[in-house]
Image (cartoon, rainbow, N blue to C red):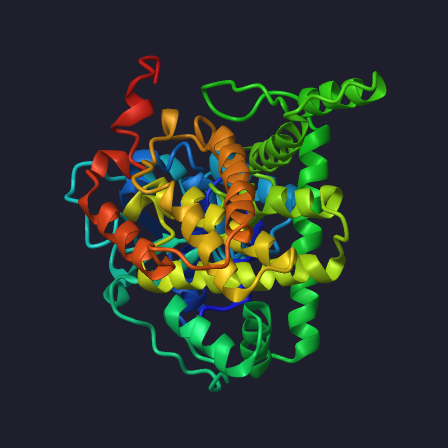
Length: 457
């Protein structure tokens, strides 16, 4: 079972696969050194980045993430001011407190290698860690893969189903067809099925606290993004625009100007606000990835602020339903742009948001499945081609369009009775195969598409 706690993780930007994942992998390696009792013997740690991490890691903040993870910091708990001090110590003094313990010599420019010459390994987001003694001997070495959405696994486990060692859940499902059959047999909604499964693994109060925390973090991120101004990090020097968009919308409201597309403008504003925060390295929720972090929050905000009868219970239903949809994509395809292109990030987020919104508005399970299918069907083949290797162009705007598509998908599905030709399972299988067929230059390497249409980068 892929849990709500796994799909919706609180972390930092700009990338779940290139920032959150590498930080978690580095933390796991550092903790392993402590567990093995060799921490005091380590004089140097080298990290080699391969594949997509090598090609776009610089723009995605991979090196700082590795440094923080080696220092013992976790994405969901790192304090920004403390993180800045750790990075400054590494950059200026060339020292690092490994696992928060002993200080070792550490030069980021020499000890983090962006290897663009070696063949891409089994997974395009692969990191190799090597701990060396003062005499140069290898004390430990590990290879980890960041497989999307902040998930990390040892390289040897890539492509192998992870054993589910937790307590049995009452309603196991690995396909949308099975999920719908469970609903028909039990009379439960998709949200109720997911909640029952979550409560088989954790106390209900803990599940509810996580839902509340995730929703609060999403709404806070929108609010911060709508206030913040300035230039986003990176050589593109992209100017934040969410604050200006908000001011224009508020000015129209005070002049009693109501444009027909006003609702779309608000949804776009919410998504852009989140993804500008993500690009700035601020705190966001992977939903299911950082690159697509604005889609679900903006559709949730649309539901909360503009849908009659919206409630906190409806937002909870939205999130639980989206969990089921995201889990199906994670289980049967991928949520990694480096594996399948942006169809696996913004496309999956759109599908999750479409199903979640339909559920919050009272749709049947069949209509929810239809909404999720529509959301992905019209993202098939979407490439991941960030300009300059930064999660900014076209990523920020792309979230706004994904959110608008999700609302449209939910509306279309709710106008029908849930019956349709292409099933969600079929579109997931199609997305997986499309990603496999997609050329590597269109999968988060910035070697094709828009990334090379911008000559300055």
